[in-house]
Image 1 (cartoon, helix red, strand yellow):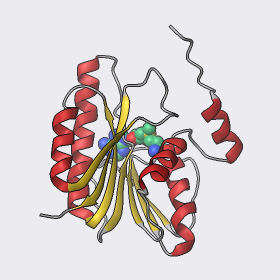
Image 2 (cartoon, rainbow, N blue to C red; image 1 turned 180 degrees about the vertical axis):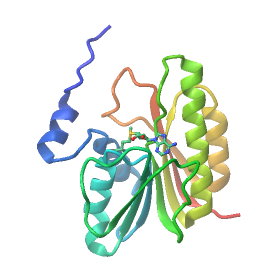
Image 3 (cartoon, rainbow, N blue to C red; image 1 turned 120 degrees about the horizontal axis):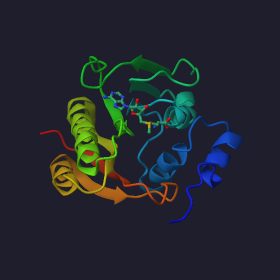
Length: 193
Ligand SMILES: C[S@@+](CC[C@H](N)C(=O)[O-])C[C@H]1O[C@@H](n2cnc3c(N)ncnc32)[C@H](O)[C@@H]1O
């Protein structure tokens, strides 16, 4: 098996560019491919710690009047400016912020135990919660991006996403590690029922 290189090209690029995690490049690729985050967007970022997606969003929308709210069990690794709000807590428990959003992101990952089916079930529970929140807070036409672990209930989950969005795309970004089971489901154009 190829040796796992923790400090790979993306890790080093993130360090060099001042991002707190290499995950930034996954969001950047998805945003550039699908115009996920429009200028001035109000963005809800579920599972936002340590904060690289929030850094990307802050840079992209902060100056044009956009804003971001991030939620995570863990604290952030850095502080942000006035356009970013952080709520520390569990997405199954914290009150979801008032107001409506243009984009809901979820890079949430469960604590894994190594038993594939258990990890997939835990991941799917987070995805379903993210979709449930998205359908409550997204403006019509809004976008959604959620990380899933391949296998398990993913085909059914994609089917449910298709009921809520005009288009649903699936993307495994270049910066995803080769041994990772993750992939991203992107819902474009929320249609409220
Ligand atoms: C891969 S990290 C996210 C990285 C982040 N997108 C970034 O760019 O810095 C996954 C995060 O999901 C969070 N998470 C897992 N379960 C959660 C839950 N129930 N509620 C809130 N956050 C959760 C974890 O605490 C962890 O920080």
